[in-house]
Image (cartoon, rainbow, N blue to C red; front, side):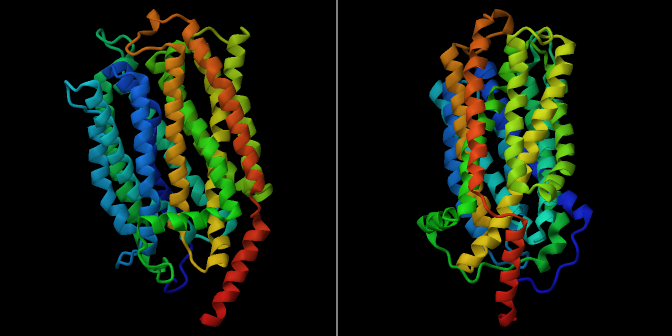
Length: 480
């Protein structure tokens, strides 16, 4: 337990704690949006080969999550359980990220597959040493039902800023069209700059977040009740124990479907923008700003929904809004009721619709992230142990696996409709991207609806959470 009662968590600390998620956002936009199109259309590797390498990297990386989570739960140092791992991750993760967009020349298809796989595993595993310990700090920084939602909203806000800010800079500055590359999205030099700037942002945000929360170390918990190292299979046994919690199982089921859809949508976003909507890199850059606006709205909206209708109900409602706004622009295009492709009016229309889409998506994920923190006390009542790292690791484990499945599914869809590598938009028949959209939409809608339905099995509301806290305090009182 903590040595003494902590002082109130200041706004600056909450902001800088959340700012660390910028690193995760940079990594995320690279894997979800740029990596597939870079290796497929710029380097010339078949889409199914690239997407399969990304899938395998995510699955291998995901295995490290429970190990890192359990290790951080049990670590005992003068800097606490979490901070040493966070500090140690910053520079190695940044260097590996830079290498990801600098493959050696002259590699065969098999060699390129091995490079993508190996470096992807390195990037994602090193980020795990930041993300899992950092996420695990959240339940310790605050135990209030609504305060946890506010903390989660800052993490998601800066995660979105990192992802979409880098996407905007890449599309508007790094990937500008040149005489040799009139379609800026296919300019290889831009991806090299993206890698360098992304690496710098990644290292800086991790270190700033760690230093901003360093003063809270004396008030953080020091261990999980004397738990011993249990080995790889022991880690998975403890994950199974966490998965036995009904509330957390509902969150995992939601994540299984939701993150698959997120991975699918993100991997195809540049393909739709380039080949279906006919937009330039500058126009696509403008569309990234809707996500930053949406993340700012989510910071205010998530706590209000939490206070008014509860985290679970808010997440379910927003998931169905996500479907509506995700399908709307394509439905308008196919019925001839939308703006001309490639036009500035189309960009404005897409911006408005995508803002609502992003608000729904980001806010729902903020609420679900805050729900995980409430599961911690629920499970502590049943087992006597606090395992924040284990819960966030299990959630991240599933998120990475199924996000990889979404990217892999995107690669299969590209192969199915016959969109081959290194194809300029002017040389592609319009029926190909249209077929891709028609293949994508029903999968996205049904998958997201099923994800929302899974949250009906989550039962921890405000009253239940406060009752759990009261029972834990009563249990701790005789020992004190």
